[in-house]
Structure formats: C-alpha cells, structure tokens
Length: 202
Image 1 (cartoon, rainbow, N blue to C red):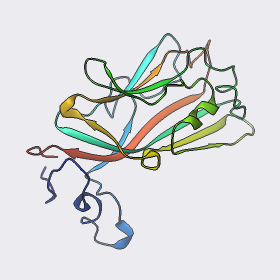
Image 2: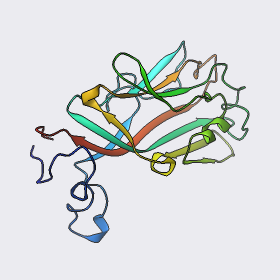
Image 3: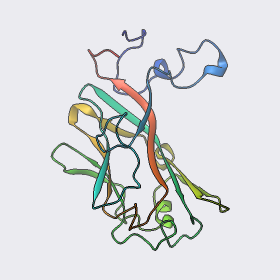
Image 4: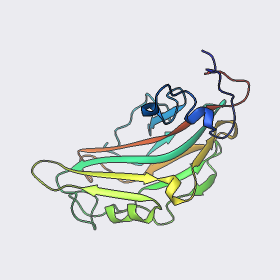
C-alpha cells in the first residue's frame, strides 16, 4: 500500500487528521491512521483480549512494531458483573488483593512510566487516573461498568515508540475469573493515531 500522499512524521499532523475528508461529516482521523487496539496477551491487535480469566498473574499488552509510533488518545474499559455499584469492590466480590498496574515498559521490562502508583484494587481507584469518566448501571442481569480514560485531558497523548521497543502493559496479578473476582467481562481497548516512521509504508 502507499502512504496515501501523507508524509510520515513522528507527530499527528493535519494530513493525518483532516486532509483525507471529502465532506465535513468525515472530519476526524484518517481511517488509514486510526488506532483501535485491544490490550491482548500477545500484544497484537488480533490477540486474546478477555481479561476475566482464571489463574495466576497475567499481563496484557499493546506493542507497536519497530516501524510504528502509536499516539494513544484514550483507553476504554468495558466490564460486566452481577454487581458493579459498590465503589469499595471490584465487581460482586471484595477488592482485589494486589490490584491492577498499568505501565509503559521497554523490551528490558524497565518501567518508563507508572500510571498506577496506587494500584487499582476497587473500582473507585480508576478515578485516580487523570481524565477518567466512569459510568455504571445497576439492574437485572449483569451490571455494566464503562470507563473512558482520556489521556489528552490528563495532559498529553501517550506515545509508544516502536523504534524504542515501547509497549503498554496492564498487569493483572489477581484472579479475575472463576474462584476470584469471577467477572463476566473485562476488556480494554486503546484508541488514537498509528503512524509509520520515515521510510516505511502502510
């Protein structure tokens, strides 16, 4: 494929945002550069994304290739369980014993940035992340809990540079499946802009 006439740069430009649109209703990120990526066991967009699994500590990743730079604008979390209306719990059960951690790491597993100096042990701890909106709806069946973490509102995009082997990691040391929190669903998706480094094609 070609570059669609848009120069490859390390920062989203007007070319990536608006020039592709043929009608004002199409304003927004050029679909060729849009990033919609679930956090997965493999770190790939088509990997295993359901975090409500049973067992020991599990890590989920977003990993750009070595010729890509991800500019992440928001992180979306979708959860379901029988009760998601108590702030002091993580679903119907008590708070998580250890808690979820979210880091940016390099390929040596050195932490570049820690978003969770206070680990997420109950649903109220998601509010400690800047630019977070939380919605929960109680009712019959599974309660949904929706979290929109808008990184732009907390100060800036999150930049993952594949040339530097950056990757976003969600560490889940507690059992979110049967025998633990027993959540019905726990899925995380990142959104933003996906750019190729100079000399690459899409």
